[in-house]
Image 1 (cartoon, rainbow, N blue to C red):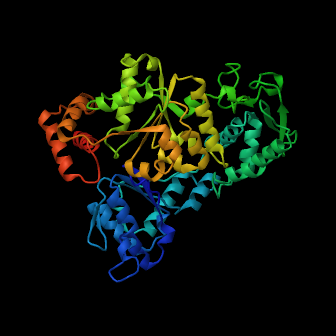
Image 2: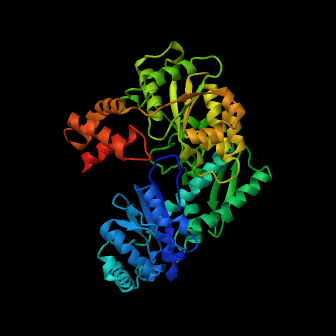
Image 3: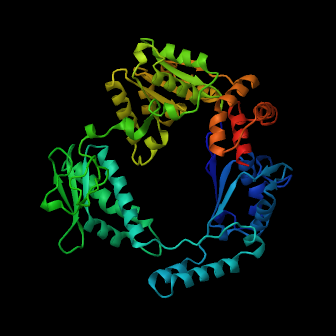
Length: 517
């Protein structure tokens, strides 16, 4: 089960591996153990997760392995959209998306792929297997049953390219470019793909045969910074061969590499050649800020109007204008508008309504997911973060970094915390009060370098003004007219009845939901 941070109010995926629910008694794990049994106080794994986060995706993986009593429990969820746990508490599933996956009939699809039968016959055989295994009461409550065809040769080739792309990224972090021929891609596909096991063995094959080989070459100093690694197949097409070019620069086109596939390059060498760039030969060619962030000033005209946060925005501007301790951290409950404060600052920078030291400044929102994605070895995350901070430092005050959920960086590792705690670069952080107390207040260096800006929950009248300010965009999106009375009632009712969330976020969600109905 994947749970987000308890203090953030974001949609999430709840994954249940149904192979763990093969016994009759395992249904109690979904809804909670009966009174007097072990685990009664913990509640059900499914009901508790949905009760706390009703806006979610529930994934029942390999559902055919579950006990039949589990299916009986799901009937109520699919029919009534609710489920009562052992404590008598009702979990509302009406706002949840339920997805089930199954491997039933996979052998029939392989028969269709091999040509023993047509794919149409294979799909019919799969559906017959599904109908034979699951009861009609369950199937009748499903909105749609989708049969996934086996991957085509073209799709498999794209999968190989994606896996090779990940290898290229890992080399690019070390200042090494990688070029792969089409023949090499075809060889990798033929050697690593098994119709029975699907595309998953590709990654293991690449780790075992390509990544290991490249690692050995790096350890032997055969590959250094600014090198280019060419990967091709030998004359008999029985193995991969590697050629190292230690000249600086990207792969140049010539007669020897006209078949080279290069992924992620800055430009194509010849329009008529199928060149895709697979890495870069120098760290100078990697723009970390563009890769791992987005400029809010450039997007300021597309952002919603920020209302009622003038005090906080002025406070942030004042801190950024200081010579020392010029990094603010926005602290407040989820949904109160911490990000809106930064967006309001971006809009003011775009209009020129800021002091001269902030004129023409880029406000870069750091993407945590992009920083973490693809980091496979220890220290790679810190390397990326350090490259971002290095570019901010080189900008000499013309770049201000915005890091939402800054406590994730402080809690991620000691190296990342040290980099951020230096406080030598203009940076805006945002986090919740509990996380600030848990991570930031314990870090004396961070506490000394960053200045706290409290972002309080707006009052109901202030929320009404905020709703009036964003009303026009919701009217344009939904094609409806929103009466002022509806905005007033949305603010009042959400403040009174929606617990566990903060204004104005819950009021805006209520208006958006009503317009979408």
